[in-house]
Image 1 (cartoon, rainbow, N blue to C red):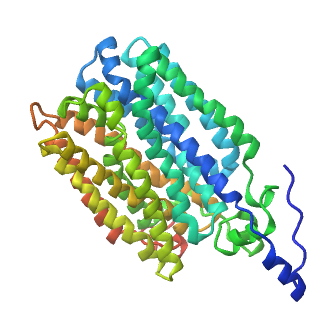
Image 2 (image 1 turned 90 degrees about the vertical axis):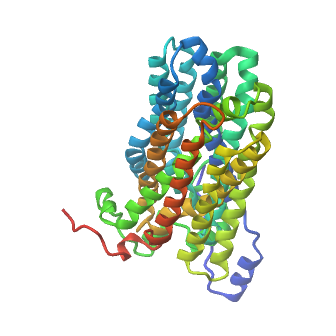
Image 3 (image 1 turned 30 degrees about the vertical axis):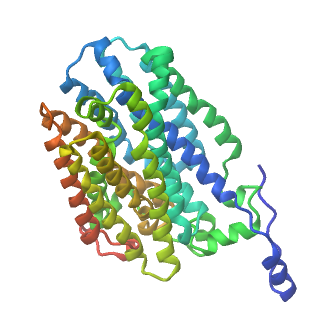
Amino acid sequence: MQDPSPAAPTGTAADTGTQRKSKRSQVRWLMVILVAVATAIAYIDRANLSVASDFMQDDLQFSNELKGVMLSSFFWTYAIFQLPGGWLVDRFGPRALYAIAVVWWSIGTAATALTRGIGGVIGCRLGLGIGEAPVQSANARVVSEWFPRRERAFASSIFDTGSEFGSALSVPLVTALIALVGWRGSFVATGALGLVWVVVWLLVYRSPRKHKWANQSEVDYIEQGGGRTEEKELEDGGKQPMKWRDLFRYSTTWALVAGYTCRGVIIYFFITWYPDFLINQQGFSMLQLGLFGAIPGLAAMVANWLGGLFSDWLVRRGTRIELARKIPLVVGMLGASTIALASVAQSPLVAMTCLTVSYCSAAVATGALLSLPADVAPTPRNVASLTGVQNFGSQLGGIIGPIAIGFLLGTGQFAYVWPLVFAGAMCVLGALTYAFLVQVKPLDEQKPMFSRA
């Protein structure tokens, strides 16, 4: 695709009037929908295992302890490769890295069908983790380039909606696929989704100034509203990117990791142990799981949008950016702690209500949370790197949570008391971290914790 023609000079009143009448294109919303779809596919592929695990457990014969390790294994490589993944997105751009990543993880998902033991499953999950590692960083980079600050939290909510939609859809979708083609066939079918997406992505995605569908009015709207395009910042005498290792000199960077670790515990409960809780604790049948299991995820999608709109509304009305991000973050994390109440629910309805409130509350925090890297990054080419660092924390939660739940899991009517109390406590700790330890301003305007080596 060719670059759009440069805008005509705007020095005259007539020219200015013409610009005012020019209808702004809306290509930025197509870009965020594209990454939302990719995120949904990623979550379907990673959540496939949690739905299929009971069938696999019968077939491959492994214990609950090994099941927890298997469910956690994706996050080992996913966490580690967050760090180089974000750097690679900043180095080569989201278009190329996204395509490579989706092809990689789609093959890894489909390959699970060929495994003959738990070791093979774990190997495929490790490969899946490597492939999906750059996703969040690429998403954040796309939003930072394509959206002004006043729309950034809502745009982040839209792409993250893919995670709730993917998690929710994975339950009925994979359940139906298993019924039709078995658990092995379900991995092949979900792996094929990503390859279709890659074709569309390569045909459609370009940066704002290089996209022939985005007119000058939209490009100006993005850049003048704080969209972090490299071209604009270079024209304005922008700074050189901060070295990757220097990001860790600031306490805010470490607080982003800690806060996301806490949130990761509860989010990944819904991706790993959630079907087991409904089946073995609440007595759901597979049919009931397929019919009702998607309720918290679907409700969280709406809560996600509302949280992002609320944060952006605060920005538009002149609220300090720090408060506009922290209010939904802190309120959402505190509300998510209600997951602990599900552990003592006396009926499936009460349990599902508690889980839905918890998941929705965590979703309210999402738009503000995912806007933080763009808000605190010193340059556009640090956004993806800082997102990768932040998302590393989420994956620590993904590693810690499933294993801790597996070992804390009791027996009998209240088997999930300690696991869900643990998850609720992590939510409270996360709220305190965002309230008191995160500073929402560029890192180079903050006082570093450590001097340069």
